[in-house]
Image (cartoon, rainbow over all chains, first blue to last red; front, side, top):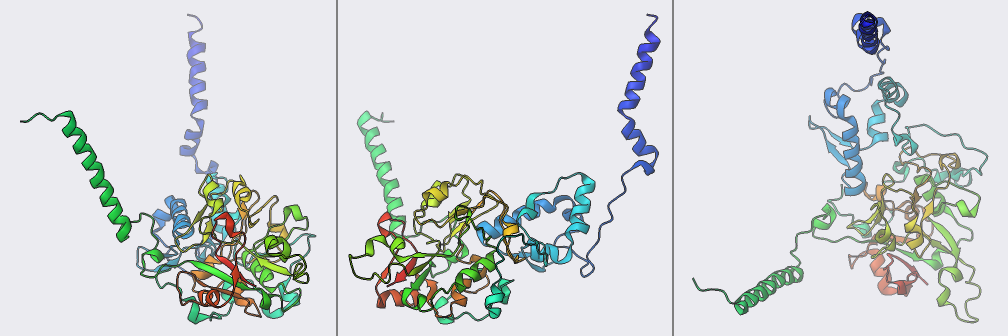
Length: 170
Length: 259
């Protein structure tokens, strides 16, 4: 029984050490990781959903958009305030948000290792430098055929009378 | 209450099955069966089945023309690998004799044997790739487009084995370094997924025709709704003799070639 003081003391030290992160967080804010400095969009004040929802559930929204666009062909999103958006990561989300200054900063702060969106989806106006592989430069051979964007194709189809696109396609 | 005999029970059972069968038959005949996954396009009065007609005479007028291929590659960020084993193809050409091996006669048409035929996914009516895909990453839309969901593709390549036309390519490497100019409006693919022609469904959604059709200087590619008897492809198919790639396989290709 003479060891009681050592045992109890040791247990107390262990308990304090175990809960140290919580004590530190409550006692002093200087030990906290600095909150991420998010670059908010300059051109818009309202996202496609309220801030609280986007902060907590943007991944749910993105997954739903993905299913609806790819599998159901529904591309228009009517927001809570009635505004209509194109369901597009590159063209809608990144039109306002900057990946490095918005997505990445918060993901890195929260320790959420990057989702693999960017393995395929592009950032607007970002070009990955080509390597030594043969460059495919359509504009070099035919300057009028430089396709960087589908919207750069002439709007009028060559056979408008025959195409008859169904009106209900979004 | 009268006790039901074994005979009565069997009679009743048989009648119930008959009644259930009759309801199903009536539904099938009148076509009023509710479809669970009907898209807006299918719900509209006019059915849609996208298809293409390739006029080989017009196509081969200009030797070594590859404008449609380059337009497709640029629009869809198709990577260019040198090694034929690693090639990724959406629209490509092959010599006539390899595309239509059974339309050759002994001596006739020797000049045409090597003529390039423009090829792409046939968007089959009964696509073998769809039947084998274990994740439903590829499926047939109601408008006939055999679509791919690259998010779901696990890279098993069953579809490549199933496709009799070689329309599918696998990304053995990260494709981004092999794309000269990335079109930011269309995603690239990533290493380990299969890709193929999507009939420019992203352009159809905007009311545009496919990129290859749009740029063809000879207007050799004609795109339209095969379900509409008055569409331009259907008119061409009425007027001229057309062949499909290996129709005997029963896949029902939506791409026709005027010879």
